[in-house]
Image (cartoon, rainbow, N blue to C red; front, top):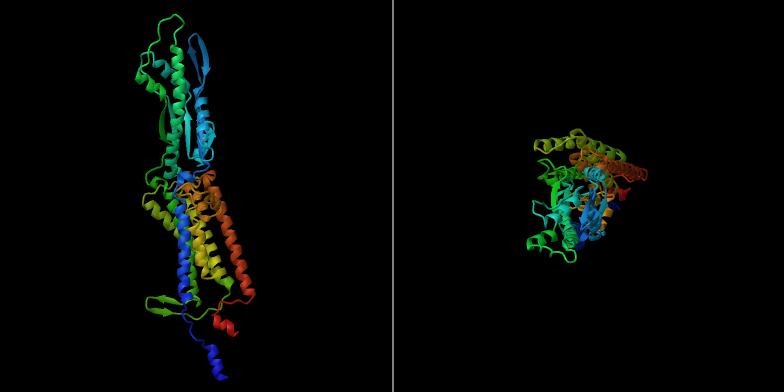
Length: 444
């Protein structure tokens, strides 16, 4: 019986079977495949994935009185251009919003639209002058439609707006050109028995066929040091990584200090005696470390950004928001680790990195990615963090520009992490599921 007891207390070492050797390879392969699908699917063909991309259309044209022969009628070419644009623009790809100039500017200031097309108030008048100028000597110029881009929404969104403007206005230009050419020919038609009508030159016909010009301008250009609108994305990524990676490091080091995990420093190996502490108290200890770490890291990132010349109009707000976001992410990550152990590393990686970065909207707009990314963006932490950070850096901390959503979702995430962590650790403690080696638990 003595030998039997010794055998039970000192189990034979586990053999590394082929399955145990291949299991980590399988896990890494699956994670890499998921990474490949998520990261490549959202960048391979943004134009094909374009949907509900918001652009404002402002028609300020007041019209003009056009005389044809002995008749005078009021025309509004701006209305025709606006109607032509609405017909030419694919509604499943572009959300063309017909707005007044004030509302359009408000939506540009709050990142609700990516660009604005503006038809000026004297559009019909200038178009009429162009028609008259084709037969009357004098200096004339083509009427211009202004395309305003919103560079604070990102360089990729700006490129899509510019491409949209070039394609849509080309179609409208041809339509208006045909109408203007017909109008001029009607004006030149002589009365019966009158002198023959003057002939239009080839240069005049070309001008009439394409009467419009496009003036592209930036709405509230970004200041220098903004990385063409990418600093918000990378700052958000830093906040998220600080919360996730920081939580994992704190989890590992505190568990090592409490004796639940061995500590290795190069060739040295230390395994401290296990500390008699409950799971709840262990989690509270980690949370307190996360909070202190969040304040320190947020301050460090703010200082580094300022040192590198990154424009920060609201430094205190960015510091508070950064610390809050890191705390929310860190608390949630440690709660997941407390619930499922080592597998929590994989869960955190999937939630915060693999699914989070492609659905953030920080590089490619959500409206230019497959539609399921929009579904992910509804709750994925990275998108919420990006909206809040972008609002603080580029939109003066406007709640409508994303700060309200970012703060509210961070609060919700923090609440979920707190409730989940406390609930699961208290459950484990009440069930007597102490953190002991499997052999010790089996012996009891």
